[in-house]
Length: 368
Picture 1 (tube, rainbow, N blue to C red):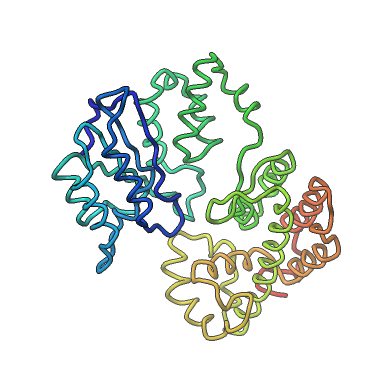
Picture 2 (picture 1 turned 90 degrees about the vertical axis):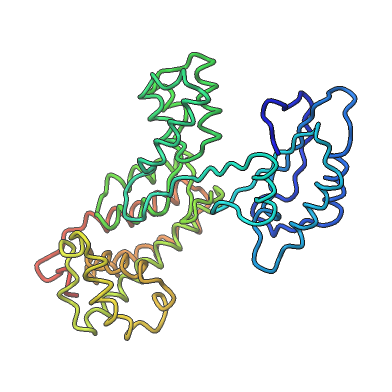
């Protein structure tokens, strides 16, 4: 259906629906598409019409072929073969159904699967598969940047898996001759950080890492949530305060549940850090006992994976340390502070005091 060799100078862009919304092709959009496909150009004999999101006709559920059938009817009645049609769609799996079959029969259907995101237990910004995919993209689009390996690493570490931004930034730097990796790192700024980074630092009692993330946020870095969505600057402190308060309360509650179930001895940080502890120990032996006790918030609606993270955190800190951190958080009340830098400093005080505290002889991980 699309012959790359026939792409003409004239382009008409048609957005069916923006990605992320409920996609339904109504009659007005189909009429517009029909007009675009059948209209001859005054300036070019060959044309390209692009549908930016054709998910509505490529994602066909069983018993829901109305949009796909209407779309195929438009092609049969209106498509001028001098017009190339490019259908784009972000899909989780290779498209199937009547439109996909039509594309295979009359043109080309190309499925470009994205590499999976790093697993929650992989402490990396990009997986090796994602890096290989991005390198392949640069090799096709901006090959001149690849010899500058340090610069490529800086761009990937800063941007994460954002192919379009990576290509655009690489093109700009290559054109400007700006190829010093450290200079580019400084100019790119503090970058993007996630709540997951802070939680991992708490789990590992890694004070320097906590300080680096909070300093980057204070310098204007972006904070993203668990789904990778950017949090607006005004919402960073309230979101972090709520997250920390809930996490501390959850860890304190988990310690109480563990003692009630006779699992106080399992609250051992070294034991929880063993390979396959989650699948072999927590899922099979610990969680079934905890599940009988966990009936109230803040853990009632948490998944098994979330509960395992809280259990590991509970094994790192004592009741006294968690209560002290909660009291400090409630006393400082950082979300009430208007100056973001000051509010983040308050959060840093709570977090760094927690991870650097030295347990006393009676303040053990399994005890109170």
